[in-house]
Image 1 (cartoon, one colour):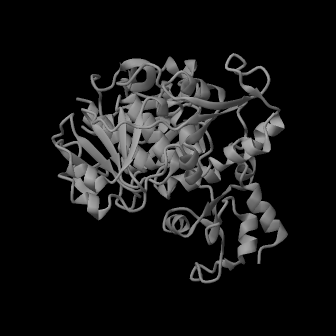
Image 2 (cartoon, chains in turn red, green):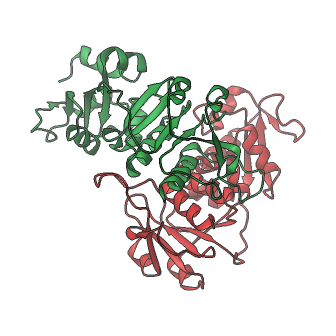
Length: 237
Length: 237
């Protein structure tokens, strides 16, 4: 059974302000929930159809009730609420990825998954970047959020305090395949429509780009695709 | 004004069998439609709000009517129907990308956009790969479909007739950063869940992979992300 107040709490977690107020976020689906259960995250509550997560004392609910609390078109047998962890502010060594106002949940989710693949432990985001505990982001990360820490901060201040070389993706940057790159560096990616903001641009020492092999009318690459190609260039050694 | 039979025709084009039967597909949004108008594609009909595409003799419709024929949650001021072009079967030289049962429209759209960026003129797909004239694919390509030809064929037969070396993305392939790669080659990417089918695997001479830098519990990379990193490795020279 799910009470009215539980339904109200869970559905409110689609909005950032309520996630922040309650310090909670939602994970859906057996595989995703299992990854969070196996991680350092703390479970708040777990709702599942009969036969799922019984060992975890899940609250058994019917499909109709799951439909009420789910954010998915097709609910996924179980829904869990976890606590948003408090992040320590210790600095990480090595390569860092920084996002300046990435707004699309799918793009952020894909970039978190990319960080996880390439062993990048921390992702630093501007305050305007989409919240990593947004249900669509959590879904797109496929569990990678349990292994990548996402920090939200003022990028201007953050980049000013760094000693590593700062690279940024620009349409008119140097050809990344010809540029000399250090493995320990910071790479900044910008907003889907506007790229890197002018305040953040001032902190960037090396402007790089992925050269265009096709005709000049081609749209720019999607930020997650460009990010993948650029991270690969830093990591390939 | 849009007649009932026009509404019926347009909405039927969300399904592959009706697109094939009528030889027509839908493009939405001012920018996308303009790209198709400027290309080799032939316009069938064009519906727009007052003030848009008047020079093209667009059929003027009201917002309510546009909502009826649109496949988007938020209709985009204009909707056009174009003819599906007949593809010549002439062989293309140089690097080729081949998709074995990619099913997600967003992934196919992103890969078409990637081909366009890297000047890859032809994308070869298995018959089970999602249709490139699916409205979600057209939307995701951002106009790149006007510059990249997508062929659907039996990959088994197709690959048997090729003289270029055939590479394929496998979880247990050789580290792509260490492999020796030719710029003129064929790269095969597999299905989101199952990878490359066993029939197609037999035609592949070089199995490659993107090495994992993170922990071993990480999910595989999304096929569009993996495709971008691998195409970049072939093209970087």
